[in-house]
Image 1 (cartoon, one colour):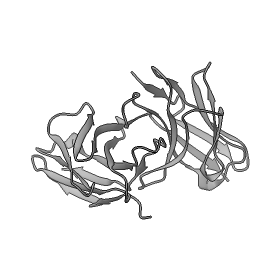
Image 2 (tube, rainbow over the protein chains, first blue to last red; image 1 turned 60 degrees about the vertical axis):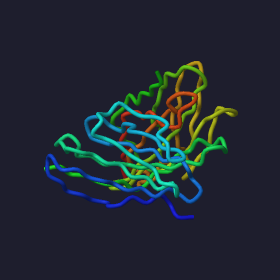
Image 3 (tube, helix red, strand yellow; image 1 turned 180 degrees about the horizontal axis):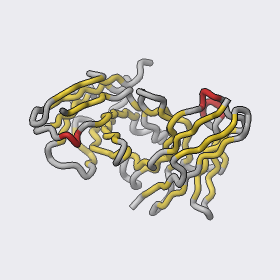
Length: 114
Length: 114
């Protein structure tokens, strides 16, 4: 079974621009969560989508948004980029309903804001 | 609120020696605990989890963890360290009974010295 894939792997943007990151979960997984990883703040939860609905949200400003499509693929968008948004953005998928509670992570998208 | 603490930023161990990476937790309700490992420029890989049952949990790559309710700890262990075990290790707790997202510790960098 193919793992979680994220595109692009690397991205360089300028302050004020917006960016869209994509995540394809493991086949059959309907939950997709997004995390931000930075040296200063560590791993922080952004939001989770399940069946095209946002189920849970972390403590991030409204510039961070996401969506999920009917095939469970998810995108996250960051508008009006700031230097502090430079981070590794990780997507994780999980199968809801089997009580395993495991999340499977993709390789991440490294975003650099200049 | 759920939280986990990894008191050591860095752990060094000689190859062949046993290793321990420490984690303590604070949760309301039953703890759902996880260990993940991250290699450079990679996403997180699941190692093991404690949901219920035996306090000693065995996971991938020869790792195990001991759940200790009285000490609220979930230390990661391996009897004999390999150089290839050098990586960043994260302890995580499920963020609430109805949530699917994880709350991560700050991470411990393990270096296995040949």
